Length: 371
View 1 (cartoon, rainbow, N blue to C red):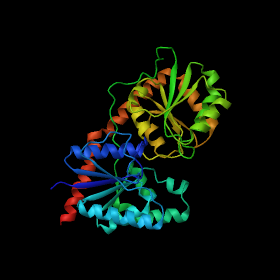
View 2: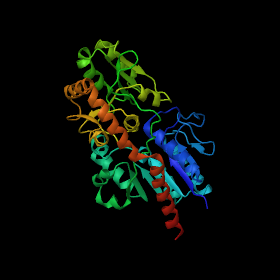
View 3: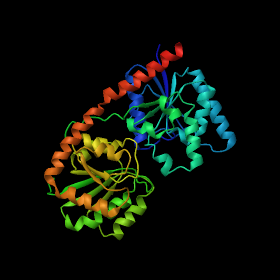
View 4: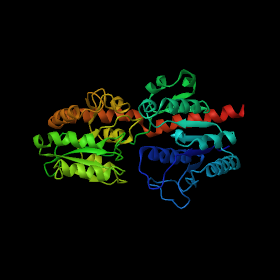
């Protein structure tokens, strides 16, 4: 009997984020393993362009973003009816705290919920009020399982949730060709790369630009290349002009072929305040790029530690980041050595092995339901 798996994220239409990529990767992989897969989002019915490729065997249900009480009730009924009609085996929700109607619909349809957490647990203290944090943890008690991206995250949740938590990191595609971080490009220049959503709260590219501006004159053979889209683009453009670094800092839109960008670069940087399992960082490391991030940034520090790059002390100090970048940019041999370590570390997150963990969890869940 084939499993009918539903995956949820609130937005997929033309959205290039890490959670969106992981959802699409998982959906395609589960189809390849013989499962029937549906995707649910709150996109409008005519918003049908997914940034990442989806198998033609996947059905994408777009429920719309109505915010009135009546519209939310209608969404609950519509989704619950869909789950019952399709005999859903499991409902995997990416970032479930965004819309509580999703919990309500899955419970009404009596479908087991798996909450796929996409951030480290520090987000509950950094971004949530005490009431919001309590409500989020309370709702997680409605799930059958909670997947976190690193095993160390489990202890940060209430003890009453620990038995539900399963650590499954993101799969990382292994590189076909590695970067050469110790060698300059054909033009004799080096590239410091950041691939990120342009978001001022979590990703904080403004801190990066200010840090790079402090050291750019000491490193005239380096340029900062930022690839991504987001609401902060205009502010970042203005900041680049104000700091007088338009010749050495570029902002570029997100691209589907990001792997070639990694291969052309020499050092990766992610100035996030927190992460879960940062996909862009992991992919860059898989391509042999050493990385720089803050030591207090959950998720970032875990991947970069143990010789895969350099950690700037603290979480938001521009001077600390500038000094760490300058050191890494000066150390050509160190970048080559750390890049080799980074690529080796990412081999632990082979896609096939990670998908096996999802399949095992779903198979066991199905077996438990039949008992």
